[in-house]
Image (cartoon, rainbow, N blue to C red; front, side, top):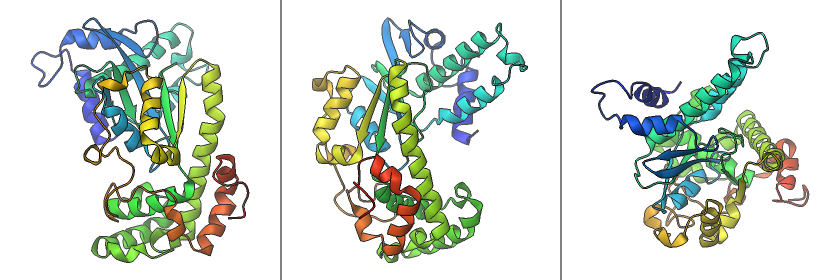
Length: 333
């Protein structure tokens, strides 16, 4: 459990303790424990509050979607809970019929408890009192966290994602999050990147030149695309609303994408603040900053960074996913 997630969990766990610093009122928490009609709705202070989720491959625009929704006064979105880790453990704990939690008498209790925990944590993070929609933004594969809760999923051209990942992994200096066979080279490059970020603007430089890193990350993107393209129809068929956005279309028509987002949640667009650079909701950024979280934000950036080697590697590892996602008609690019 991450430090931030652990701290929030401990805060939620002691909400009824007398004198708990910063603890919300007990009545609010009781409301979070009780679902109202479905697993993703509660009644709090006479108002219906609903929960939703933003997902998608990292560096694909999940922050952008969060910011666009955050313009609306009735929406509060926080990141990143990464409830998929909790869900994986929960399923493993109940996944065998000889485990106590899987028994017919206990499983319903486990399900309700899990759902209440998710709602409590999300409500605990919400700092917009008037919010009627409370969301979690976690870059991850498409998956249902609360049964039936609406999901916004965004995808982006995997080649641009590779470029963004390159700069992100160099900037954050967290090689422990990468596969073991590339950690040493990633750590070495990240150290040099901090001193000479402009040097990494050359085509095929940085981690893009590391074949092991490149192939691994390309497979990650391809797997995410398969999960969302296979999973979205199944979720919709089961009754879970899923809005699939494409980064490139949001970039071309940000106002239209925002309207679609608000319509998906049944929100009045007139109650939202305007799109603009100050809120990081306009498409792209004024200048490229290689060592910043918001680096460039353009479409087709990969063309300035891929050499023939990177093109070949990507085609081999994720070419089929690229075609399936509609970015190319074939491998002749």
